[in-house]
Amino acid sequence: MSFLRPVSLLVAVLALVGCATDKVTHIASIYVEAPASTTLTMRKNVKLPVSGITIPIMTKELTLAEDLLSTTVVEAGPSDLRQVYLLVHVNTSAARNIMDISRQARGKNLVLVVNDTAVGILPIDQQINDGKLMFAVEQTGMTSREAALFLSDKLNASTLIIRKELEQK
Image (tube, rainbow, N blue to C red):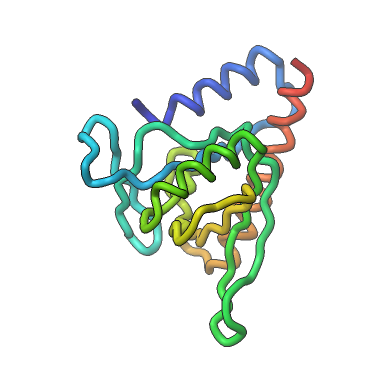
């Protein structure tokens, strides 16, 4: 399986619907870190662009681009160690799926993949119940704040186009 499957599916949907002026430029999916017991055919290694962290992820995504509702940039942590995150909101069905997976995958990570590139990581410390995911994101040549703002803008614009196209069906 390839990361291109959700991208190809979305491009096909948008081509059929006829997206003339607006173009989807950033397609995001969320994956879960693969357990060590998974076979090589069920996992794929991804590498974050700045830190160089390599994470084996399952080849089947937890969410597709159409599961994303919106993103925001937030700061969290103790006042002297605040960090910037990309807060990703997902729809109810994706939130249920993530809730089930996060209950079983404590100690693993969720990985945000945009346009076939891993850009963010979220450690699973506890079950995630609300469909709000705070990813530490990175982009080459950008600070964490710049990366979060850039990705938030691009993903929100693409999400709006995707949602409009799906509503017209």
